[in-house]
Image (cartoon, rainbow over all chains, first blue to last red):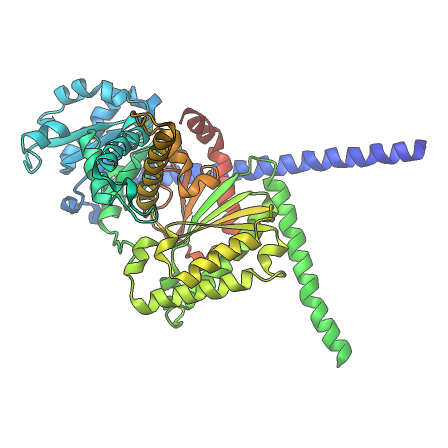
Length: 255
Length: 276
């Protein structure tokens, strides 16, 4: 009996040592991975400075006209740094980007919109531009502010708009296998509830992780999504590189 | 000759066992950190793979199927419970009719194979579900998908969702339509004049993807950085990973790299998911 207990204890010890070794190995691998990313970060930072100084020629002429609509996703904690957001918008204005949608999950940027519009010369709100037919005015930068309520919650509101249509149309008697609503009806319903902005061509994520954080699903079907790192370490050169990469992309839309 | 033949058979089996053991060791190390519950793949690169290797058009899709099965096995061994793959988009119907027909024939062939008792999905305990607007498929394929779902219904190691005739926008519209029909039916039963409103919960339970939790990771191959109308609703808190490898070349090591990157970002992602 003692021998059996001792054997069991021995196996337990071996198991614990084995677990400890696995944990050490896992941590070691992650340290190496973090080291690789750190080195890559330094290389990217160097490249972005070279781009900013105009030393990398191919980035000197951007075909910005291809970028009709840009979206920026910012982590809500970082969205409080309004000066950083302003700096980013000024860079975009300098590059020639005319339509920008700023998104953060909690709506921090929405609360700062008056401040941003005041400080950014010539900027106008998307809704205002739409109403006054100013969307084609190339002198102004059109800004849109979105949050999580423009995503799933807006779809729910649009669903209720469609539900009212469903009740009024008499489609309740139709065969339930047939499709009653179309994508254009949904798009119109979203416009009705105030979430009918255009689909961005490019979405830049400023945050620690590559995650779109609930940007309105209906609008990012074919959007290029690039991760830029945290807002606090944003660089002008990285922004230029991201826009350049976008202009080189060829889409076939599934065909 | 016979002895040589037996030895010849034993060597691959032995190698297979060694490779399997090494894989288990690597997965044991990976399992120290958080393992994703649900991983989704946008399997891009089929046509490019065939072009690069001068294969006939469509051969890339065959290789893509094998890559998918390998991934499902690895995910099963690693303990990833849900795997979703973007097999065929509604947009893909716009491709050349020959290519579409080839893919449909391939799908039919593979579904029939998977229905066999000793198929790879039954051996590994993979339960298969098809998500998408299956009404857009021909009747034989639709019936075959239903049969496969029934045949694998008792499997429980991995839940594989194949998105066929799927787009997120179609899924959202379908969910809204079903919610409208349900609300209308509730109203008729209760005889109230007021129909009530559709809530977020009503829409979410009618989604094709309601059978699985939101994905922890969405992987896109071929160096593309788009979701292409895939899981747009469900990916709010997902880690988006893009790799330049073509889907057919997406291997065990790529999966290990994806999971390690997920583990690196997991604390932040977990926090975001809770907030969402």
